[in-house]
Length: 551
Image (cartoon, rainbow, N blue to C red; front, side):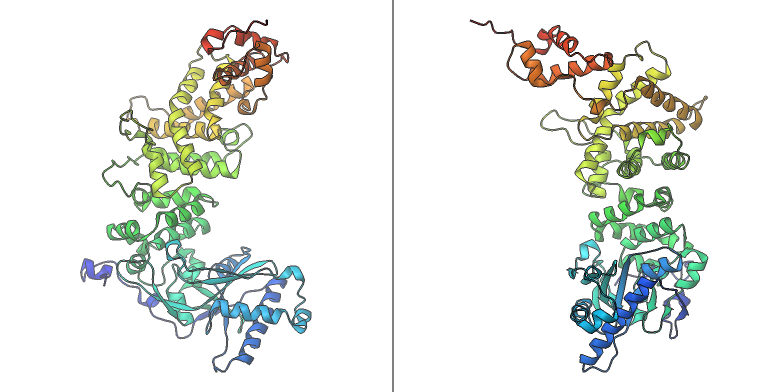
């Protein structure tokens, strides 16, 4: 068995089990919850289903139902939730749900509970999948607009080498103690109408504290994913993580367990939930402060690759959060982040920034060049999607050109009025994966990280950087080229080949780009003749064949 933290550090360890938390409560603390009319309707239906089942059972134990975890927590915080986990004491979730469906088909039940055809959706079962942190089968039904999961109360026993526990039927106390945080271990007992707290959940809710029900070190060793879950809940709820838990969350043994026992897909799911939440900066701050960065954003199959320097990473996520919080029309964030998808991509690229300064291995020239290390870190570390990985690679590849144009505008270079130069650059950045604006934001954030980390006699302030990049974006707006990737061609391929009197060939794509560049230089001209003439002047350069003479 794995030794507990107190045993590892010796008898004088400052990290001790918390007896008031570890001890099962014989009489749980309680409070009440005021249900909405729909919630009350759902409660009455489920209680009748329990009575319906009790009548057909020969076992004396009464079916007792509890709403568990997140719904109870959110309800106490005044947050509406449409996902309700229902825990059952003496039968599986599937068995209860099947009996519920039988009862709901009876005319008396339909009339009593005002059940409309649209009130009850299909029953479906989510299979057990330990690698996705799904240790027990659950059955879900759509009821009165709620997604209701049914599962039995359970207790868990872990082995040293696996985060997949042995599952058994358990009591409400045992079910509460196996959970990741006390604020997620609360029950609402449908039979009594009261909240049940077998840990310290209600007290911790008032204190806005995220704490593990059992001793933290063993809790995280049993299931290291709980480290990330606590980070997510603390960020989302704006709670504080218990200092006793914080002390061990970055422990080398915990980090090793996180690497070995947790699938990278599951780590990616937790991170996605963090970065798509309302407080992504806080999530990254926890990851930074707790020493989790190198465990999360890495290629675990290549332990010998160099680690990025994250000493200036804080400036990056704080800068993006400041831009987000202080967004105004025409500001950097307003111009560059135009959708929820772009916002999520921006936060992932924030995580990639430190890798920008790690030298990529030189390509031998044979075969396709490997992606940059930053792309590998999210592809293998959090199993990012192909689109997101392609965006990280493209942002890396385009950063040098973006920086050069920013400098040109700042230095008032003579060519900055050339609309086609900037417009065609934007089209190139956007060509493969889109999101050219997010790529520009990435270049800006890397600039923030690097400039603020430079030990120079004349350090550049954040305000100076902001003014420089804002001037660049304002210049693009003045040139009216922000929508250059979607610019409609003044002439298409068929029209161009016909005007030139030749057949299509490999030259055509480049020739059409020449036409687009001409359009950007002549935005008021709607006659394609000028574009054709431009192409004709570059026949040799483009490799356009000579016009065939008619016989």
